[in-house]
Length: 115
Figure 1 (cartoon, one colour):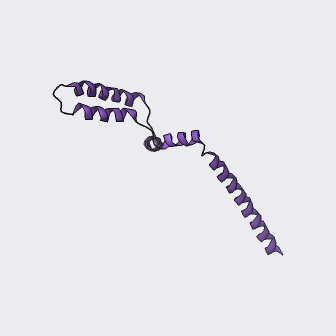
Figure 2 (cartoon, rainbow, N blue to C red):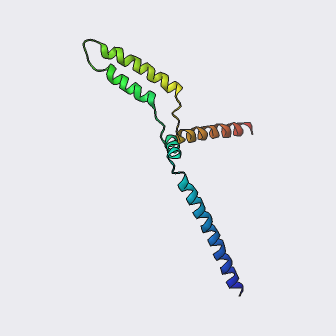
Figure 3 (tube, rainbow, N blue to C red):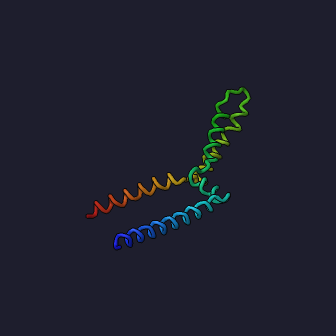
């Protein structure tokens, strides 16, 4: 009789666990809304308008042309791209994780130096 009680108890625990899992999965499916998906995408892959503008500026700047108009267009694009890179935060989750890892290493090395 005791074995049956243990089996029933295990089955109840498994059904509770399954109920919690399905609840979590249904909550995760709610994340699939348009705005949430856009935010998560931005965290995974942040756009980099400054870098793109610099690349286009360099391409235009180095195009051989006798009048020099491409130089007049390309140089400001390069400078604007550099400005955007300084002002725009294009950090992704990978960048945040690596910075956290570096910070953790610095704190650990400081603690080791103190003791």
